[in-house]
Image 1 (cartoon, rainbow, N blue to C red):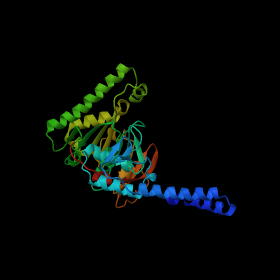
Image 2: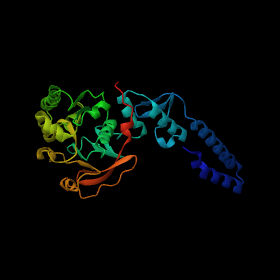
Image 3: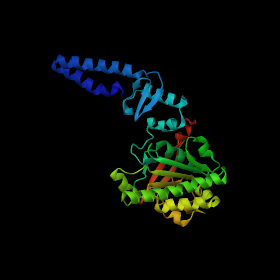
Image 4: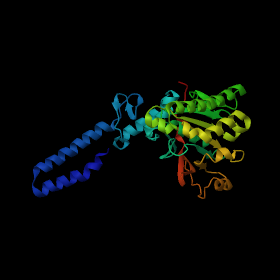
Length: 335
């Protein structure tokens, strides 16, 4: 925090001390200014050492920085950015260290879909459809989602765009792509179908109707998020994919299993899936006709050198969204 913020109080103290002859206030004001200057000098020098994220607190070497970034000095901000850009952390830690610069919802069972825009898995259906042409930012959004996920959410990723997302995120354990053998792809989708059946049995044994009720009793397991990049391609290439995605879309909410599907167009996306994905995010470049089909009458805004523009339709409302591009730049190396 800059000592300039204290100048008004110090000036008032000096003025009051001089005009009233109350030299005690005068001395106190001078000492306050001196202490503020010394503290700013000490905090202005960023400590050396490794950049670490412990819980929700940022450490530089052996020094823990203040919880709120407003209290960081400019030197500390610059040092964090410098070290974050340079460090070769294991990919999971590196990607989720984006929390150090504020890319974290701050709540469980939630992820970011844009700057300061949180999407919660435990509200509504918890499914999200993302639509946009090539280059609109779908992969950037996937990176942001994964970066901001709470540690307790289990993640499965199917990449039907040549495996690019999985190449950059090699630590994801439950995954498949269109470049893998058909048997491997089938095993992925069958695993998800079996998981739905297992969770139905789990709820029956616990005597509760849905996953939220199990969470309230403290007996539930982590929620699952299934990310399918280029969902239409996945559905066309594998009948098990169509079966698994349809089952999750129709009854996944009550079982704590949620979808995030990306597609370039609504063409080829079965209606049974579409009507159950009531939260939709359209990126810049989406066809106007398809925007109307999604129920969006608003124009998509303009992005910047650091963001991609989008519009989110959720819970009967429409929100302008900016998807940050920085998640793709996070260090990614197999742990």
